[in-house]
Amino acid sequence: MDLPDFLFLCFPIRSATRDEGAAQVQVQRWPQWLNGLWQRCCQVLAANQEPRVWQEMNRQGTVIAWHVYDPISGHRSCFGTELEVRLWLEQQYNG
Image (cartoon, rainbow, N blue to C red; front, top):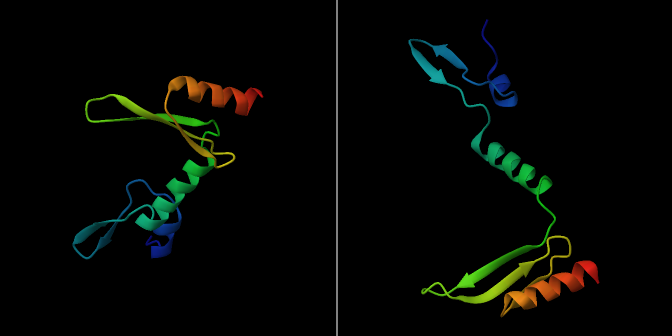
């Protein structure tokens, strides 16, 4: 039984192939743009709501700045030391 083309795009099919004359054509599970959109939606929905902290280093590997991002409020800050970051986090979440 031959399935319509739209079924191959709408439903995930692991290793679907169809005969077209003598050639076998591999059918994609999802169009690439739709797969990318789905992956991004999953990332957003599953995103961790905890603050993100990272270091900025120079070429020698010395920490030159600490960055903080709070995904809930959208607030971003930059600090010179780890202690300043810890104090800011304490004020924001325990204050």
